[in-house]
Length: 186
Image (cartoon, rainbow, N blue to C red; front, side, top):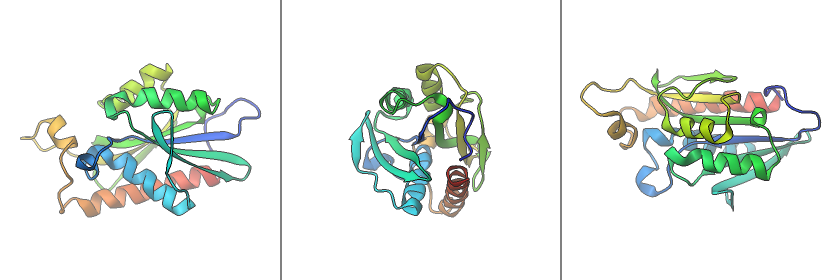
């Protein structure tokens, strides 16, 4: 598996999709991390149904490694609380973590993978980095941009994805899911 170097004998990888709980947020730009995680779970045959660490989780072993898929239920701006609890529960290090989330600075239909970095303009990631104390973990950012000039950022990320944008957003989520699956199966 290709994750950042980790301590010897680690056998857990935690993949967290960021989003907001509740039907009203289900198909918003800010929930693209959840939508991508659903694709990964479906392709791995993992049912996301357990409730732990303020998250909905599912677990699968691949090649002797435990893969934990998680959707925090803490709302986006408090995502770090759930991520920190998951790291503690599974005795994992930040280097065992991959976070999947939307990014307004990336064009719809695309994604970017990084081994580490800052939160950029994303408040959910700011909270994750603040709560776990480092940005040294992998991330996959799915494009939801560009931001229309006449729409405030908060309104845009929480709006239901318009029908015209859904194919592009779905393409970005599928491509990101492919990357994640390649990372955990490598």
